[in-house]
Length: 207
Image (tube, rainbow, N blue to C red; front, side):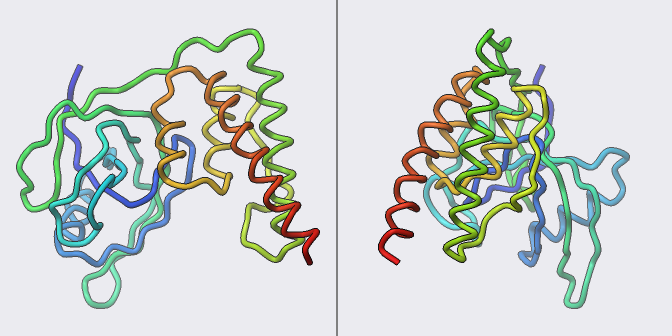
């Protein structure tokens, strides 16, 4: 069933179970933040900007994104907002409505497929790959996730958490987000991270 949701297109992908800090300064999204303050369960949708810019409008937007729950927001000097939110579930845009003043869309929830028998093994492989990347990033002085991170036991949730922790570009991240199969998502992510491990190990060997 489709329902209406305020939308916040961004140049990066947000996954379910991922924290999203925001600094809101554009007028249309300042209006959105103000409107969300009077809603019992404040939510908005995030989709990737596939072409164009975050500021000004007119961008081309992905059709599959993530519903985000607003956890905390504070208006600061100059009418700007600082906010913290968290992804909750995947959504698909069925139609874009006129901006008034911020983007709004009709969306429907998108569920994952049932996990396969090998999901637990793939969850563990992804966990080890993310940990290896994080250790190499720390050794190189690159920003990365904390070395003591944990993933959920549930492979479907873990697949999103691992994606959020991984240093992957927005196009790869979007490709992983649209996958309905959590086992496939874990498999693809682990393959991407193995390539990244090779690059990081080469950098480390070169000093």
